[in-house]
Image 1 (tube, protein in one colour):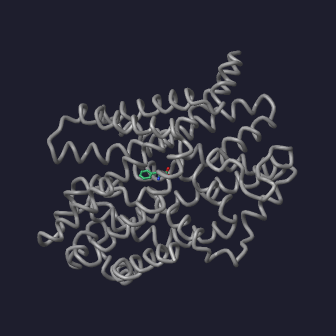
Image 2 (cartoon, helix red, strand yellow):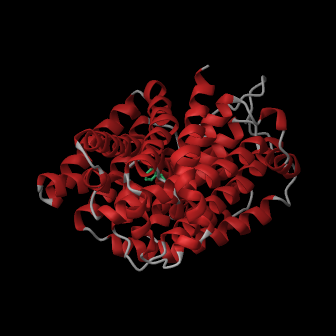
Image 3 (spheres, protein in one colour):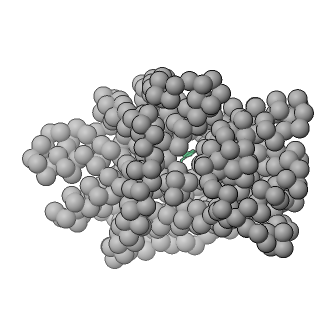
Length: 434
Ligand code: PHE
């Protein structure tokens, strides 16, 4: 549940629809689905199995597998790179999560008659951004300080199905509105000529790794928390399936909603057909949809953005856990102190991003999600494929899956992470720069 909680977050409801809308619609969806199952899932397995074997943070888990000094250095680099990547990710993630929280406050403020507050919390104001980022980061820090992840797990278990139901209900509603058909077409009918577009491929790969929280050491840590009785192969498959389904549903809601909003006169595309506000797209489209519902829209808007804030929280705590668990295990730092110091440093960086939004936001997001995560994820595959002894992997995987040796998974996966994943991920990058 914690791994699913980490995976399902803003990547699904904000990242995926935004990327789909800015990368050619259905062609992006198609490539995303292929890459999520064919590259992200095997890489996800690699990270989980490294973690469960190592029973520790990413750096220790990786160096424990290494056989000599050079391999240990490589392991350190991959693990530490992941931790840095998770921390950088959190610095921009906190800003978007802050927007989710502010949009959850808006309907509440209207309900109690604080109209001015309601208007302010959804304006793109610097103080609003900073205030809600601080609030969100404070919550993240408080949870990691207390180590109350169990409570959060329980909540995500209850709330995730609710998010699922709400998405389905909203999709049913949106497709009955004028303009939705054009959105469905854009979302579901791919233009095959765009499929091999280098920019689309890198974006889809980055999005798949972002959504499954890969290349950040997070899944290595979560792997270390998984019991040896669990079957890792099916566990990873479930998490991938849940994560991809929620992203797909979010797109099925937001793409049609975009066209409905456009039909109602909201400007979504510029005269040249470009998206006007990429990063804030869902915050334009969804409120327009909720407004059209009348008074009940306030309640639905609150439910939706509150659920999203919680989904973001179950992801952000996993990001903060990455540097914290390293500091605690490696330097014997006191947990509460380490959490506060690291959390505040990341928050300070978030504020720098908020102050220089146009300059830094897109840059940090692209650097971490499109480059950092897939590259570190690829290095984890190389670690499993080339450094870790096959028999030792098998012994690890056998725990929780007695007959794995005879399964199709074992016939394909070791060979697959050794050759196909690194080559395919490398090819996407070479393609994008050439
Ligand atoms: N997977 C999370 C999401 O979709 C984001 C995340 C990335 C969480 C990396 C942890 C590490 O929102």
